Length: 148
Image (cartoon, rainbow, N blue to C red; front, side, top):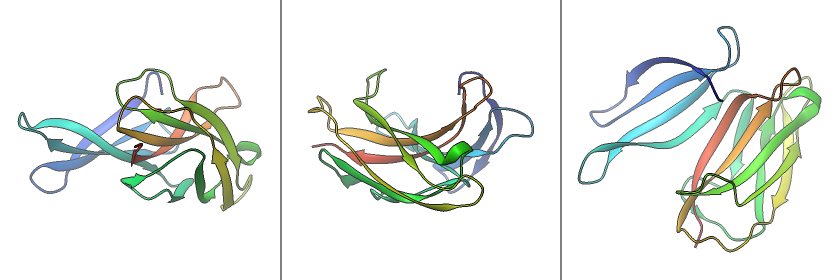
């Protein structure tokens, strides 16, 4: 999302919480999970979830190799959910693709996404729905992974 509407921070335990983010005031919510980590207690994004995109695999912090298997359930315009493998510190994804779930109700998706050898150890799987109106990201689910 390039200009999201960001909700209030909701505290979890003493070092974590979540923030609701959405594209429009009435659009679906993506909940971003954050936690203070490291010696400087800086805030890190641990993942994100959207009601319309549920990722079953890979699991959070799973070690993945190419091609990574993506499974879950979703509902999106024409059933299409965009997929990415990303590595920490890079602006561009290692690989992109799509899976197809439900178009009018939640339905299973399954697919694979091949990616080149990463240069970083950690990254994320990103699944997102795109607006048919203008191509912007409507909502996303993100799972942290280990790449090597």
